[in-house]
Length: 315
Image (tube, rainbow, N blue to C red):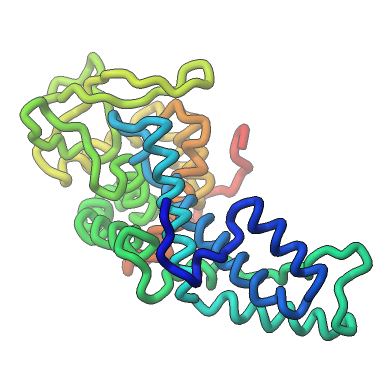
């Protein structure tokens, strides 16, 4: 991919750039401080974008492929370099800390010739979207989370009240299953199913349904399959059916023991909500995104505080 940002072009995200940065750190520790700080900023932006990508199912859609995922990774790297090239304030703070460490050692590099150690950065501060980020980058993802949360929150709050859990958890679960509203099972004519939670139409389902492509993990391998999904008349109906499903015998124990996002996520996975072995971690990330960028103004349900905090089985 051709790069047009001169400031970003020198960032050492690839192995050759890292080798050059190490050599510069050995020859000129003080001069390399700025480069090391900028490199860390670029890598941090790339990891944030990667984490948010993983919190959405958009890479597991019917049109996904290894080539598509490769190009998505390259695009995210380009965005990360551009964000770091413009600067978010992280690199300048790191540079000052690195220079102080070098000064404390007397201005030279360690005897081993390695680059100065990277100071710790508080993830919560680093995760804030930088000003002026590209629409398709971090800021665009944050906007998608906020728009989706605003659209479904009234329905999530009603379902959360019935279940005794946080509405943020339900908003995040719907966001994870639909890529923050971008994907949902549709009928052959393109009509929406309003199915926000990937709930399938089993033999006991008597309502409308649609057949759509999905991915199931079988023997550790993700495979594309066609499945019948429940179809609803509205998002309100979807959340109502979701609350009924989680109140049923299969998930009731998992929900009643959910005292925090981790126990909620792992409880659903252990009850068999999805075949993806990494599903609980993805749901935790989605909940964290809602909590950071689109938190509920409603009071946290008191029922959650009363639940036991027993260890998660198999977590």
